[in-house]
Length: 97
Ligand SMILES: [Zn+2]
Picture 1 (cartoon, rainbow, N blue to C red):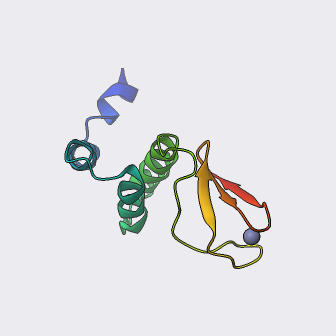
Picture 2 (cartoon, rainbow, N blue to C red):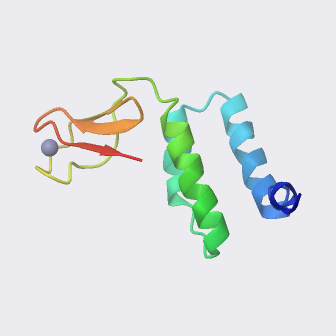
């Protein structure tokens, strides 16, 4: 029983509302992920939640969507999302989760 009520803590609720709001306004999922990634959160439980949300949302990014950032292996900016992972088109390295 305790596990479920945990999900309805105000801070969880607020962020869930925020995300469903931006999705309703047809903000690209990639931008929502970037937004969530940029949130500065100091409590450990909300950071766990944040990481979970990022992972969950990334699964909905269409394959081949251009990603922001640089490849950790070769420094190329030619990154795309593929099955929820970031793939470097130049060296083929992938980063999931
Ligand atoms: Zn690369």
